[in-house]
Image (cartoon, rainbow, N blue to C red):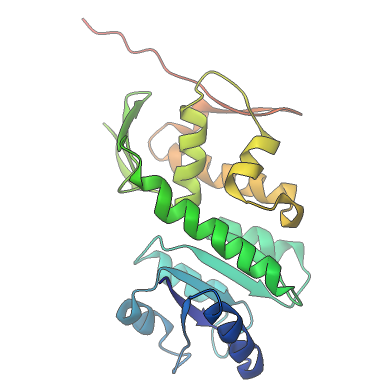
Length: 231
């Protein structure tokens, strides 16, 4: 049973989400103190966090930043606002998805299924380590390491990188990537993929690797392989 932390101050909506998710055997926990979201997150150790943007005292963006200093747990934002910048901001902060209120519960459940299956199933594959451009990719720890240091990626970031380097020097279409990342692409904005890839590049830039992820306009993305010569 997956444990879900639901950070939602609307008591009616919280109760309805909890009932609906319980029907799918999800164990949903709320927040008792909206000033201590991180402390409750650390204590609960959830498998996924659903968080509203508009919350008492601090907004969801603040708590997402704070949670990300402790964990790369999947995070899904809920928002009643219709500003495109909210979605972009959530992706830049490392959220795995963004759901606009009001939403259909089938959409919420489909997205949760897809995220949890992707995050907690693909790491069971036999291959745990991969080398790429002189760096070591650890799929189990979600880390990339080279002579410049090490970075830890979110679940979406490591999955995108995995898709690209497994097909290195070949273009992976945007459609294929969206289908792999999100089960029902009808509910995914094309911009969501762009934001996720750009965020991955920015993280890889810390190791001077971002330049090896290329955009092929109108087609998709490509991970190139740097050739290393040894004496």
